[in-house]
Image 1 (cartoon, each protein chain N blue to C red):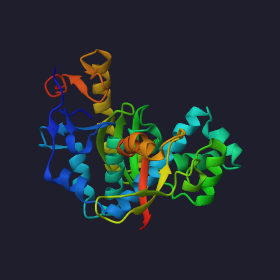
Image 2: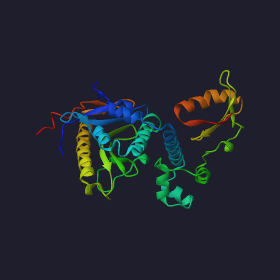
Image 3: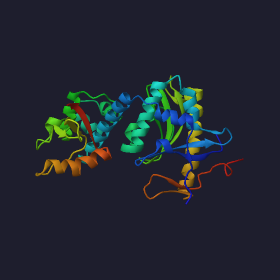
Image 4: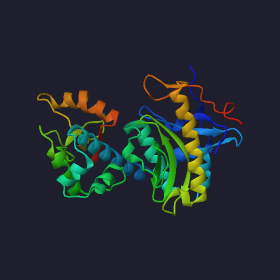
Length: 163
Length: 151
Protein backbone atom coordinates (compact mmCIF):
# COMPACT_ATOMS: atom_id res chain seq x y z
CA UNK A 1 0.00 0.00 0.00
CA UNK A 2 2.12 2.85 -1.31
CA UNK A 3 1.68 6.38 -0.01
CA UNK A 4 3.63 9.62 0.08
CA UNK A 5 4.65 10.50 3.58
CA UNK A 6 6.99 12.56 5.73
CA UNK A 7 8.17 11.45 9.14
CA UNK A 8 7.27 14.11 11.69
CA UNK A 9 8.10 14.28 15.38
CA UNK A 10 5.17 14.58 17.77
CA UNK A 11 6.79 17.03 20.13
CA UNK A 12 4.02 16.86 22.72
CA UNK A 13 4.55 13.10 23.02
CA UNK A 14 8.33 13.12 23.13
CA UNK A 15 10.67 13.41 26.07
CA UNK A 16 14.10 12.52 27.41
CA UNK A 17 13.41 8.77 27.26
CA UNK A 18 11.62 8.28 23.95
CA UNK A 19 10.56 10.10 20.81
CA UNK A 20 7.26 9.38 19.11
CA UNK A 21 6.99 10.05 15.40
CA UNK A 22 4.12 9.63 12.99
CA UNK A 23 3.69 9.80 9.20
CA UNK A 24 2.36 13.02 7.73
CA UNK A 25 0.42 12.33 4.55
CA UNK A 26 0.63 15.42 2.31
CA UNK A 27 -2.04 14.11 -0.05
CA UNK A 28 -4.49 13.98 2.84
CA UNK A 29 -2.98 16.89 4.83
CA UNK A 30 -3.05 14.94 8.05
CA UNK A 31 -1.08 12.25 9.90
CA UNK A 32 -1.79 8.56 10.43
CA UNK A 33 -1.97 9.20 14.16
CA UNK A 34 -4.50 12.03 13.80
CA UNK A 35 -6.66 9.83 11.58
CA UNK A 36 -6.63 7.27 14.39
CA UNK A 37 -7.57 9.95 16.95
CA UNK A 38 -10.40 11.28 14.76
CA UNK A 39 -11.84 7.82 14.23
CA UNK A 40 -11.84 6.95 17.93
CA UNK A 41 -12.36 10.22 19.78
CA UNK A 42 -15.76 10.47 21.41
CA UNK A 43 -16.28 6.71 21.06
CA UNK A 44 -13.36 5.26 23.02
CA UNK A 45 -12.24 8.17 25.17
CA UNK A 46 -11.30 6.14 28.23
CA UNK A 47 -9.09 3.86 26.15
CA UNK A 48 -7.52 6.84 24.36
CA UNK A 49 -6.76 8.45 27.71
CA UNK A 50 -5.02 5.30 28.91
CA UNK A 51 -2.89 5.13 25.77
CA UNK A 52 -2.07 8.83 26.12
CA UNK A 53 -0.90 8.34 29.71
CA UNK A 54 1.20 5.35 28.71
CA UNK A 55 2.89 7.17 25.82
CA UNK A 56 3.69 10.17 27.99
CA UNK A 57 5.17 7.99 30.72
CA UNK A 58 7.30 6.14 28.18
CA UNK A 59 8.44 9.42 26.63
CA UNK A 60 9.47 11.02 29.89
CA UNK A 61 10.36 8.20 32.27
CA UNK A 62 10.57 4.57 31.22
CA UNK A 63 11.37 4.57 27.52
CA UNK A 64 9.36 2.52 25.05
CA UNK A 65 10.01 -0.84 26.71
CA UNK A 66 8.92 -3.78 24.61
CA UNK A 67 6.88 -5.20 27.50
CA UNK A 68 4.47 -2.28 27.24
CA UNK A 69 3.56 -3.21 23.67
CA UNK A 70 1.53 -6.09 22.33
CA UNK A 71 2.56 -8.25 19.43
CA UNK A 72 -0.43 -8.28 17.06
CA UNK A 73 -2.06 -11.64 16.35
CA UNK A 74 -1.32 -12.53 12.75
CA UNK A 75 1.93 -11.99 10.86
CA UNK A 76 2.68 -8.29 11.04
CA UNK A 77 6.45 -7.94 10.92
CA UNK A 78 9.26 -8.06 13.42
CA UNK A 79 9.04 -4.50 14.71
CA UNK A 80 5.31 -3.90 14.33
CA UNK A 81 3.55 -3.73 17.69
CA UNK A 82 0.38 -2.31 19.15
CA UNK A 83 -0.30 -0.02 22.05
CA UNK A 84 -3.61 -1.10 23.45
CA UNK A 85 -6.32 -0.50 25.95
CA UNK A 86 -9.15 -3.01 26.07
CA UNK A 87 -9.93 -3.64 22.38
CA UNK A 88 -8.45 -0.42 21.05
CA UNK A 89 -5.28 -0.97 19.04
CA UNK A 90 -2.80 1.70 17.98
CA UNK A 91 -0.30 0.06 15.66
CA UNK A 92 3.30 1.21 15.93
CA UNK A 93 6.63 0.64 14.29
CA UNK A 94 8.84 0.29 17.35
CA UNK A 95 12.47 0.84 16.46
CA UNK A 96 13.71 0.34 20.04
CA UNK A 97 13.26 1.84 23.51
CA UNK A 98 14.02 5.33 22.15
CA UNK A 99 12.03 5.69 18.92
CA UNK A 100 8.50 4.66 18.00
CA UNK A 101 6.49 5.57 14.90
CA UNK A 102 2.78 5.74 15.54
CA UNK A 103 0.47 4.49 12.82
CA UNK A 104 -3.28 3.97 12.77
CA UNK A 105 -5.51 1.33 14.27
CA UNK A 106 -9.00 0.90 15.64
CA UNK A 107 -11.33 -1.19 17.75
CA UNK A 108 -10.52 -4.87 17.39
CA UNK A 109 -13.41 -7.32 17.51
CA UNK A 110 -11.83 -10.09 15.46
CA UNK A 111 -8.99 -12.48 16.29
CA UNK A 112 -6.46 -11.20 13.78
CA UNK A 113 -6.13 -7.78 12.17
CA UNK A 114 -6.42 -9.37 8.70
CA UNK A 115 -10.08 -10.12 9.38
CA UNK A 116 -11.05 -6.45 9.85
CA UNK A 117 -10.88 -4.14 6.79
CA UNK A 118 -10.05 -1.04 8.83
CA UNK A 119 -7.34 -2.72 10.92
CA UNK A 120 -6.01 -4.46 7.85
CA UNK A 121 -5.69 -1.14 6.01
CA UNK A 122 -3.97 0.51 9.00
CA UNK A 123 -1.57 -2.38 9.33
CA UNK A 124 -0.75 -2.60 5.61
CA UNK A 125 -0.04 1.11 5.48
CA UNK A 126 2.21 0.99 8.54
CA UNK A 127 4.07 -2.04 7.24
CA UNK A 128 4.79 -0.28 3.97
CA UNK A 129 5.99 2.83 5.83
CA UNK A 130 8.13 0.68 8.13
CA UNK A 131 9.70 -0.98 5.11
CA UNK A 132 10.61 2.41 3.59
CA UNK A 133 12.16 3.62 6.84
CA UNK A 134 14.03 0.35 7.30
CA UNK A 135 15.51 0.68 3.84
CA UNK A 136 16.79 4.21 4.48
CA UNK A 137 18.25 3.11 7.82
CA UNK A 138 20.01 0.22 6.11
CA UNK A 139 21.33 2.53 3.37
CA UNK A 140 22.42 5.03 6.05
CA UNK A 141 20.29 7.75 4.48
CA UNK A 142 18.82 8.05 7.95
CA UNK A 143 20.95 7.74 11.07
CA UNK A 144 20.41 8.24 14.77
CA UNK A 145 21.36 11.21 16.93
CA UNK A 146 24.02 10.72 19.61
CA UNK A 147 21.40 10.25 22.31
CA UNK A 148 19.51 7.79 20.04
CA UNK A 149 16.34 9.81 20.45
CA UNK A 150 16.12 11.32 16.97
CA UNK A 151 16.35 10.37 13.33
CA UNK A 152 18.74 12.47 11.29
CA UNK A 153 18.60 12.55 7.50
CA UNK A 154 16.06 12.68 4.72
CA UNK A 155 12.72 11.98 6.37
CA UNK A 156 10.67 12.98 3.36
CA UNK A 157 9.38 9.93 1.47
CA UNK A 158 7.22 11.80 -1.00
CA UNK A 159 8.99 12.09 -4.33
CA UNK A 160 11.19 9.04 -4.52
CA UNK A 161 8.41 6.58 -3.81
CA UNK A 162 6.07 7.83 -6.53
CA UNK A 163 5.41 5.51 -9.45
CA UNK B 1 21.89 18.05 10.08
CA UNK B 2 18.32 17.39 9.05
CA UNK B 3 15.87 16.34 11.74
CA UNK B 4 12.13 15.83 11.63
CA UNK B 5 9.95 18.87 11.92
CA UNK B 6 7.97 19.16 15.12
CA UNK B 7 4.34 18.46 14.50
CA UNK B 8 1.32 19.34 16.57
CA UNK B 9 -2.38 20.07 16.19
CA UNK B 10 -5.40 20.81 18.36
CA UNK B 11 -6.33 17.14 18.12
CA UNK B 12 -2.95 16.00 19.42
CA UNK B 13 -2.92 18.64 22.16
CA UNK B 14 -6.33 17.39 23.21
CA UNK B 15 -5.03 13.84 23.34
CA UNK B 16 -2.12 14.94 25.52
CA UNK B 17 -4.02 17.12 27.97
CA UNK B 18 -7.38 15.37 28.34
CA UNK B 19 -6.15 13.31 31.26
CA UNK B 20 -7.85 12.34 34.47
CA UNK B 21 -5.00 12.98 36.96
CA UNK B 22 -6.17 10.20 39.28
CA UNK B 23 -6.23 7.66 36.45
CA UNK B 24 -2.93 8.95 35.03
CA UNK B 25 -1.26 8.52 38.41
CA UNK B 26 -2.55 4.94 38.71
CA UNK B 27 -1.30 4.11 35.22
CA UNK B 28 2.10 5.65 36.01
CA UNK B 29 2.42 3.53 39.15
CA UNK B 30 1.46 0.35 37.30
CA UNK B 31 4.03 1.04 34.60
CA UNK B 32 6.80 2.07 37.00
CA UNK B 33 6.27 -1.06 39.07
CA UNK B 34 6.44 -3.12 35.88
CA UNK B 35 9.66 -1.36 34.88
CA UNK B 36 11.19 -1.97 38.32
CA UNK B 37 10.31 -5.66 38.14
CA UNK B 38 11.71 -5.96 34.60
CA UNK B 39 14.95 -4.25 35.67
CA UNK B 40 15.30 -6.52 38.71
CA UNK B 41 14.71 -9.59 36.53
CA UNK B 42 17.46 -8.41 34.21
CA UNK B 43 19.84 -7.86 37.15
CA UNK B 44 19.11 -11.33 38.47
CA UNK B 45 19.18 -12.81 34.96
CA UNK B 46 15.71 -14.24 35.43
CA UNK B 47 13.44 -14.98 32.50
CA UNK B 48 9.67 -14.70 32.63
CA UNK B 49 9.57 -18.45 32.80
CA UNK B 50 11.97 -18.71 35.74
CA UNK B 51 10.24 -15.95 37.71
CA UNK B 52 6.89 -17.60 37.05
CA UNK B 53 8.28 -20.95 38.21
CA UNK B 54 9.72 -19.39 41.38
CA UNK B 55 6.29 -17.99 42.19
CA UNK B 56 4.31 -21.00 41.03
CA UNK B 57 2.61 -18.94 38.33
CA UNK B 58 2.09 -19.30 34.61
CA UNK B 59 4.58 -17.25 32.50
CA UNK B 60 1.64 -15.38 30.96
CA UNK B 61 1.03 -13.95 34.44
CA UNK B 62 4.52 -12.41 34.41
CA UNK B 63 3.85 -11.00 30.94
CA UNK B 64 0.76 -9.31 32.40
CA UNK B 65 2.79 -7.90 35.33
CA UNK B 66 5.36 -6.47 32.93
CA UNK B 67 2.75 -5.00 30.59
CA UNK B 68 2.25 -1.99 32.86
CA UNK B 69 -1.47 -2.76 33.00
CA UNK B 70 -1.63 -4.91 36.12
CA UNK B 71 -3.31 -3.73 39.30
CA UNK B 72 -0.93 -5.37 41.80
CA UNK B 73 -2.11 -6.62 45.16
CA UNK B 74 0.16 -6.26 48.18
CA UNK B 75 0.44 -10.06 48.28
CA UNK B 76 1.69 -10.20 44.70
CA UNK B 77 4.20 -7.43 45.34
CA UNK B 78 5.36 -9.16 48.53
CA UNK B 79 5.93 -12.39 46.62
CA UNK B 80 7.71 -10.72 43.70
CA UNK B 81 9.79 -8.62 46.08
CA UNK B 82 10.89 -11.70 47.99
CA UNK B 83 12.11 -13.50 44.89
CA UNK B 84 13.70 -10.48 43.19
CA UNK B 85 14.94 -8.89 46.45
CA UNK B 86 12.98 -5.77 45.65
CA UNK B 87 11.64 -3.68 48.49
CA UNK B 88 8.28 -2.25 47.47
CA UNK B 89 7.12 -1.23 50.93
CA UNK B 90 8.37 1.51 53.21
CA UNK B 91 8.58 -0.67 56.31
CA UNK B 92 11.00 -3.04 54.55
CA UNK B 93 13.67 -0.37 54.28
CA UNK B 94 16.62 -0.22 56.64
CA UNK B 95 18.14 2.69 58.58
CA UNK B 96 14.76 3.90 59.78
CA UNK B 97 14.38 6.04 56.72
CA UNK B 98 10.60 5.85 56.69
CA UNK B 99 8.42 7.65 57.39
CA UNK B 100 10.10 10.93 56.49
CA UNK B 101 9.16 14.35 57.76
CA UNK B 102 9.58 17.10 55.26
CA UNK B 103 9.24 20.71 56.35
CA UNK B 104 7.93 22.95 53.62
CA UNK B 105 8.58 26.56 54.69
CA UNK B 106 5.95 27.81 57.09
CA UNK B 107 3.67 24.83 56.59
CA UNK B 108 3.36 22.10 59.16
CA UNK B 109 5.61 19.08 58.58
CA UNK B 110 4.07 16.56 56.20
CA UNK B 111 4.34 12.83 56.81
CA UNK B 112 5.58 11.08 53.69
CA UNK B 113 6.23 7.51 52.68
CA UNK B 114 8.67 6.80 49.90
CA UNK B 115 8.14 3.80 47.66
CA UNK B 116 11.51 2.66 46.35
CA UNK B 117 10.94 1.22 42.89
CA UNK B 118 14.57 0.34 42.20
CA UNK B 119 17.09 -1.31 44.56
CA UNK B 120 19.22 1.27 46.41
CA UNK B 121 21.81 1.23 49.20
CA UNK B 122 21.38 3.62 52.11
CA UNK B 123 24.75 4.69 53.55
CA UNK B 124 25.33 5.26 57.26
CA UNK B 125 25.38 8.87 58.42
CA UNK B 126 23.18 11.88 58.00
CA UNK B 127 19.84 10.69 56.67
CA UNK B 128 18.75 14.25 55.92
CA UNK B 129 21.79 14.84 53.72
CA UNK B 130 21.26 11.44 52.11
CA UNK B 131 17.68 12.31 51.29
CA UNK B 132 18.72 15.65 49.86
CA UNK B 133 21.63 14.36 47.81
CA UNK B 134 20.29 10.98 46.77
CA UNK B 135 16.55 10.68 47.10
CA UNK B 136 15.70 14.08 45.60
CA UNK B 137 17.56 13.47 42.30
CA UNK B 138 15.96 10.02 42.16
CA UNK B 139 12.52 11.56 42.62
CA UNK B 140 13.33 14.00 39.84
CA UNK B 141 14.59 11.16 37.65
CA UNK B 142 11.37 9.27 38.22
CA UNK B 143 13.05 6.32 39.94
CA UNK B 144 11.09 6.73 43.15
CA UNK B 145 7.87 8.37 44.06
CA UNK B 146 6.90 10.32 47.14
CA UNK B 147 3.40 9.95 48.41
CA UNK B 148 1.76 11.94 51.16
CA UNK B 149 0.02 9.71 53.69
CA UNK B 150 -0.89 12.11 56.47
CA UNK B 151 0.00 15.34 58.21
